Length: 384
Image (cartoon, rainbow, N blue to C red; front, top):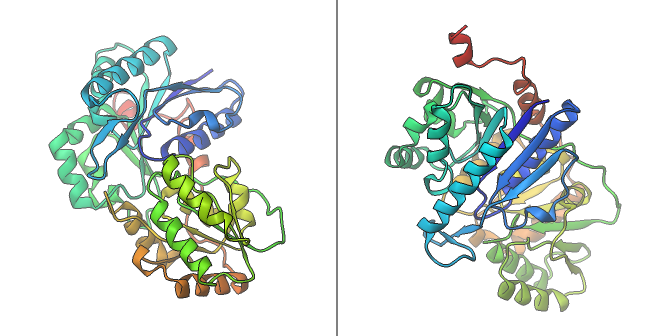
């Protein structure tokens, strides 16, 4: 049996937790004795079904202000106190669960550096778990990431890790390539391909446009713009299914419910745990450009119009720009999401034939294979 512990800091959206559950599903499906414990800060982790032999430990949740700084979601306003609490909970999970492998998603030192004490503890163990860091294709503007990592001591922290998995196709420039991680760390750096699910078959022939901002914490501007276009007649003859996401504030959700109720062609679903089925079944998708949503659109072969956020970081804009030469994904700025732009996308998506995706979407299989016990790391081989 191999015990895996995944750390997923999850402050603003659902992407990190969803990627962890996808990889966990691959691991338990690969070996009936594997099990995975996901330590997560996602406030909605309980809303998603988990496979057998996968469970979670819930950390007190945090969120981000408009300036990108962290703050507690519910427990007071002292972020330093919250980080100390979360550190002790992660430490307790590691000590009690005794994992063979720890996979840290996206944040090498965790939220606000909360993993630093845990990593230092492990460094002094005679037999420590295999330590793996998983990074998105795009983190942010590379110069900004490099400066932030220098300021926060991330570059030194990378030497805690045996391996770094980059969840992207090396033909589509990644932040890891821009920062030259393979040369600047002792860890083995592997581009795994995009971590994509097996998408379900479409369940309806009734054409509809799916509109989703992902987790929904900052998606209200996209949803307002789209409803403006519906009110202007841009989607005449086509239904719209709008899923605001579970993290949209109650006030903004109430505003959208009132507007959607006035539009017969709009169905608003407050939350769905069947987003992959909706993406596969849609005629087209209007979305932001978060990692999981984009990868699911590519895996389903569904036409998509991406409206990437540009604050507090450029990650989504960079991803949409870099994928454009390799895919049929369209994109536009939020300010350009006019009724005319929506009408053109809806009309084209009903007639467009999507060619097979040419980028690597085999990240799950690659990670599962790399994490099998027989796989040795560069650091381990050096001591053989």
